[in-house]
Image 1: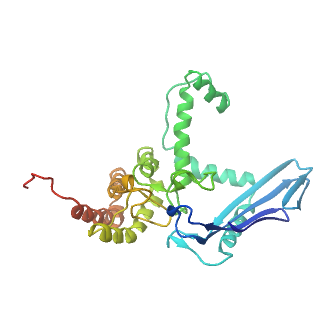
Image 2 (image 1 turned 60 degrees about the vertical axis):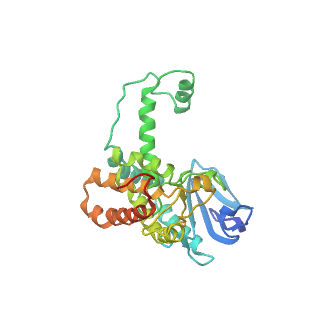
Image 3 (image 1 turned 135 degrees about the vertical axis):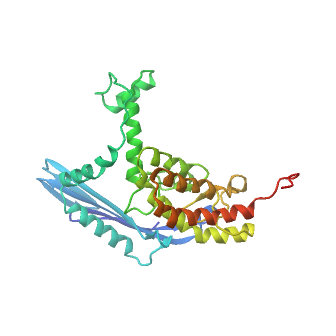
Length: 318
């Protein structure tokens, strides 16, 4: 990392830095200075004081403390590239934080509940009752490991999965739910925290239509649409085919070629599998505008690739 520093100013902890890639792994991309990132934690005590000192915030005499946490990068999803400028990430971060920090914790919580509740309440699951329903979740999990049953916890887990998808794939967000999730704690995450189209990305969205969360698919479909320009190049260069293609995984920058090994990387049916989600969305919503303007053009263009890619099996005469 370059110029990665943490400073304390007033009631804010400020992180400012830039990713530096080295060629220790050819799959990481070209070496050099790349994405800028920024983070701010604003400390708002209820009573007492909050004082910046040596890169930390010291809180004394407060009855409660609210932390407003915001992060941003120089990534531009529409361009699938980085916005230039040393201050672009920090400017974005400060703008988003200012909008949030002007509201109280109670107001933010109330808005969140009012926003999510109507969507979460579209689906209910009742498997019965459990004697452990009032216990803390960690105790319930420990009891299950010992062989106890807890059908209420199964219901909770079902709704938790819906909540995570709704939280990680919804406008104004512009990227779909990725392999590790937006709460991934690693600097260098397993499988690069990217989008594996040989089952992982599909699995993330299997609940979308069947649990009445169709709105979560919008970032996924927009992302697949943005893959097409690179996918056309890959289809032409690798297979001399029409249409577009993506192999076993891609990332936020829209790569579509074979990577991370020929054995599992040569999987040109990734786009075919993803196209099923477009059809499923139409089947559940009967949204003809979506079918006409978004789904059909994408599916048709990929079908052209499949038509050129397929070969007749030996012995087949028709």
